[in-house]
Amino acid sequence: MTIRKGSLKAAAEELSITPAALGQRVKTLEDFLGFDLLVRGRSGIRPTLELESALAHLGAGFRELETVTRILDFQRVHEIHVVADSDWADFWLKPRLSQFKRNHPNTLFCINGVGDIPVRLGQADCEVWLGSARHDSNEDVLFNDYLLPVSSPENTERIATLPDDFPLEGFPLLHLDCYTTGEDAFGWPEWVRRHGYRKTAPGRGIRYGQVISALEAVYSNAGLIICGLALIQPQINDGKLSLPFPISQGEWSGHPYRIAFTESALRRSQSNEFRNWLISEASATQENIEDQVGRPPGEA
Image 1 (cartoon, one colour):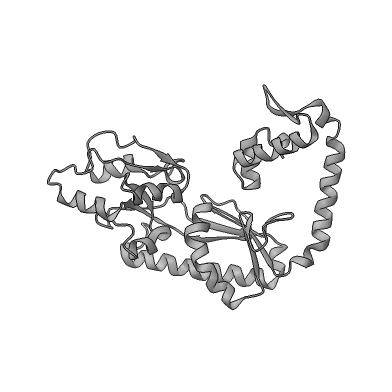
Image 2 (cartoon, rainbow, N blue to C red):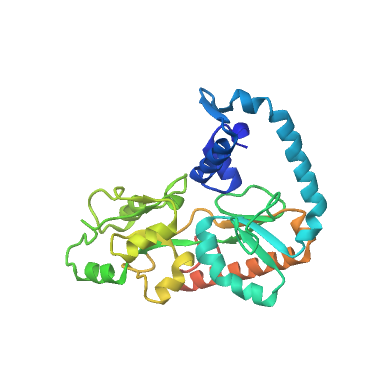
């Protein structure tokens, strides 16, 4: 995979693991064999001479493994393997999954490599991502999220007592990469341009790749983030997080969460049941957000 993609980062994205995790696996194999497998060249990662001589045999071996996986796929009749946006999986899916499993106790899950079946063979049954459509015939829209500033209750109280027109001046602003890259980016610079509350440097601050790590900083009063309401609604309801500004001062995400199942997965009844359940839960999430902030622009 690394050789075909030309980089550890691209290969890791394909495998839905981090580049560091992939690099560690390569190093472990190199330590076991006693020689290097990969070197970095001008055009990217390439095989060493030792590995190059074995590539044809490895390719044949992997093709045979894929064939065996397809032949034995009937053994996974009660398994569902999911590759998903990690924030969506941690904050939206996992709190709800116990409900589905109570009604389907014989269905086992592997989500991003962990769960009831920690080892995945072959292609995942479904993939969930935040972003644009891939024009897959089995692709469904789950829901659009609503992005807005979030803080600890303590920081919300501090902001409320400040008489200045710019209460965010001096407050650390934290940034989530999942919302602040791409043509539909929405982060602190965009929010401040629309609503004010700060005069300088809205783009400065620590950046986070995942919501879970950014929230740890928010819980400890280290700063404020802009986050999707659907992911953190329970924490707001429980009083662990707070909205420092009116809920109307937010923005619908540029792209929704989407899901696509493979053809082979949809030939199994439990995968179809899971798909229908996800769409139903996502519809309830969308309705809950719209009840609070209204419909997205352009919708009737």
